[in-house]
Image (tube, rainbow, N blue to C red; front, side, top):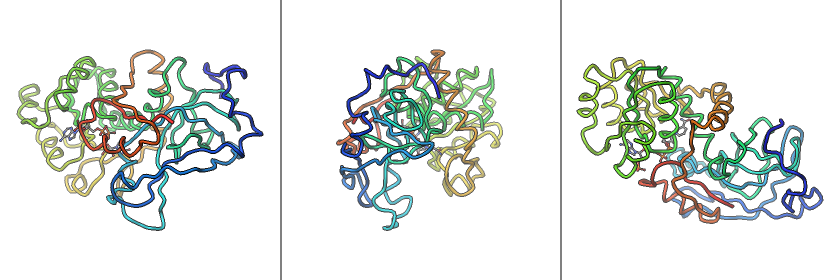
Length: 330
Ligand SMILES: NC(=O)c1ccc[n+]([C@@H]2O[C@H](COP(=O)([O-])OP(=O)(O)OC[C@H]3O[C@@H](n4cnc5c(N)ncnc54)[C@H](OP(=O)(O)O)[C@@H]3O)[C@@H](O)[C@H]2O)c1
């Protein structure tokens, strides 16, 4: 991989020296048990040396995602053999060693254990970071960005259509809003009032999800919306989605659940019967980078926390965290 972000060797961080790798201590945040954010622990770890087809990356920022919290909350099981649970599926940083040039600035996704100072990742998980893009924004681009790309593709959003986007101001929602707008669709988006200004800036018509969403949608789209893009998954939200859409074939959710199965709603991601969209998402990583470089896709950072305060970041994920992504900074 070559990219515009390669730095001169003189700019490499001191810790890049291959000889020092074995001695550099790195922190990592893991879930030591199942439960709430109090289960998170900061521990020393040795990231190891990269093998063939791998790189060692100095992590500059990490994207926090809903799955990070769910992975140890108990909602996805409580198998003691899986403890401690590594956290973090995306980050951005600088290559220190391995099969890419040291100094390359990369976005890393998918990856496991990104809540760390350093991480070993596959070369295939690295995409060049757009030149000049802050690490904190880059760290939040991929996981929800690719999920949003999947959502927009699966619902077939097209120019001139009107779509309802549930959870428009979240990590997924803001990307889905921009992608749908870029395809030329009119987007009706639900979010708390504090987040309406940013949605209007993106050309979305926002509405408070605590009010009567179905009545509001019917007023704007009396014949029904063409598609519903769901990043919420609650049964009530799925029901109102089916109420206002012309054809249930064009409703998809990123939150697989029995409620979605019972309603015959297309489910994307992980879970029984869900479409993981592996190839589509892998390809979308490059499209997202291109969109950032072309200037029409933005990453909104709602809040940032030091890595050691990952538990506070997870508490903030609990609700009302403001529009966009939460990131951790080592
Ligand atoms: N399947 C996949 O591949 C995949 C990938 C990424 C994410 N996801 C899932 O998608 C969901 C959203 O992820 P995210 O990263 O966007 O989370 P997020 O950043 O927390 O965003 C969720 C948004 O939904 C809002 N919200 C809460 N209740 C709502 C309701 N009844 N109606 C409309 N909006 C509501 C929240 O508002 P407040 O916080 O302001 O209350 C928040 O802005 C999560 O369940 C996540 O696990 C799935």
